[in-house]
Image (cartoon, rainbow, N blue to C red; front, top):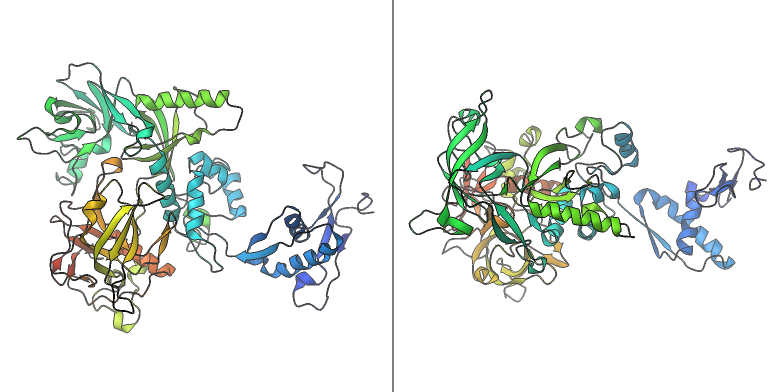
Length: 633
């Protein structure tokens, strides 16, 4: 009667009477079928009774040849009924396979929510534009944003499966995206917030520079970048000492600033060195609207003439007459806190107001517009499903960007930022964190500073020596190194560590061998493209993208391999055996965010009072060869 539609919804259910005395409620009299008078997307109105999930789950697994059904931990109590159903149906011949249910902890990622209930609320209440909003942690959202499928697979490989609750750092996902896109994406020039530059002594019309689409992959070929009398540069690449921003900074150049200043020089990437002669201002706001500059003809394509001091600053640009206007959606994390709603009580209060910035005046180089036209034509002619977001670039010095699905042609080009070139969400200690000690007991306390000082003493900074270095067999941007960190085996012999470092293309493997450097040796080992890395090499960097320069921290002569570095003026370091807990990893993030080189290139750690304290070996400080006032990571 239930199947024939003679009963109303909720009037009857079909139960399996198993063991009414079972302590597991799922094994007493679980519901198998209920009445539902609704059309099914596959069978229409043929049926009006439908199986419950717990009953259909093991049957569908067996019919589809599933060997292991992976569920979250809340299904652990349901496993006995899963196994009971399989055992009862096997003798009938309806199924022949015996699948297993295995439970693991659900995936939690910081700075977002994965609950369907919360995601529905975000969509229905208009906090996002839809399920495929590029800020959403949905497959359609990530696809539209431009996240490569290989990056998601790499992320899953890295985090693995566990029964312990965890909250994965959002930066771990971003790192996987960067790793994949760095290899796959061609380079291009795009100015997000343009400032016009007129080169007053240019009389050569349009000159074209032939530059590679990718610095490491010659198979991608070259592209022609036009250069002419008028170009656009990023507004942030000019610091107006004489204008409002200069007055706000007391007329001083920001520390470490190496880009264009009034009456100073900067190099335009691939092109020439220019000198800023005059600043044209808006009569009301006094903001610069145009720079009048002269170019130095002898500096073409990176050349520094004899007798001229090398210009350190290199910036990107787009030629004005050939550049194509586009809209750029600069996406950031959807929530401003790591665990939305934990402190505020309402996750909606933790929405990041800066998670989307729409830049309508961006200008991109000519070759990108042609690629967009070609992509649209291929999709129109293709019989298979293709996505515009598969066309992605590294916009030099800005980040990785993918074409948005709303792009319709050269007159309506829209790009979405997938991820920045580096993690810009460096962890900073909050007020309550500063008030708590991060030591491991009374022997690990500092008399003067409670929080960050104890953090830095937990990290094992050690002098190490690189014995071997070569390319990673599975990733062109990684190097595989054998590093002596002072570890001794049971037989008294050295036990070098395997270290995977993202230095390919930055430092030659031959130049690494024999260097005495600094390594962090108590981080949890991490698999990088199938090879476990058991230490982290510390390096300073300046510049971004393909113009980035990287130098390792070098230990002085006389420093012993394996010795533990100390922080200037602080108690002896007492490193954790292994920094693998959530609290320990956050402590390391805080320490890393406070590491930098000073004006002499020495490695320093900045405490909560702003004091720059050197990292010291028994033979003195560690330092880079030439890079100063730069972050260390």
